[in-house]
Length: 265
Image (tube, rainbow, N blue to C red; front, side):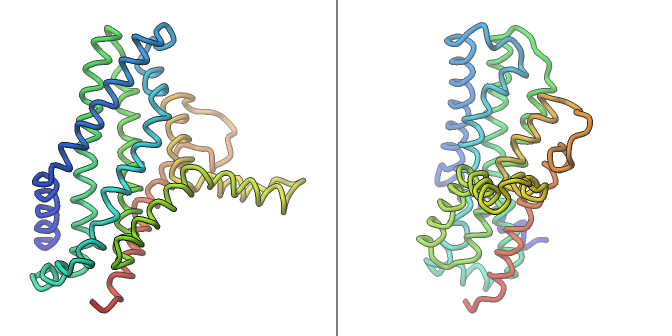
């Protein structure tokens, strides 16, 4: 574990020196606070509670967090392999598992600090604008958003560990963003319409929930908006949404590590 800790420390310190962390914190704070002010003061009347506020912020959050996660992760290992600095790192007492896990933890910490700062500032501003509200909706929204962010950092690190080219990594990350944010449900619907026009099989409806975005929205709806709903199919339950996000937070980085472990560097 000492190898993992040293990689995490180096990665986090590099983010501080490059001011990447400060830039992300500023981005999230400006985004959350600005959106809250716009929704409460400009739109007005429609936002009367913290729960309504966080639901109103959902659309921009679900686009910004994946971008931040992928951009933070895609260059973590591929960039060092391309520059050759990974050879120095691996001559120290670090295994390849230490490098991948350390990069995942370090980059996730950077993203988490930015999100937490944004939500902390948002909570203060929301209290000032709304007067009072229940804390629970903010905490639920924050917890699911952090898991959503971890899923995309893992995806970025997995891509980065799978290639020694930052050009390939950035193209793969951009493709993943387009696929999971815009194309996944469309493609599943296309298969359903052409191959199963009459039956609409349940397994395709379940597959539609396997994108991080679909699971994020389902989790927000079940835990924050709808609450318990009787007789829902399993793939629309909150626990299934969390399970899918956990899989996205673990499987891509594991696949990336297996690829990184097998290449000759």
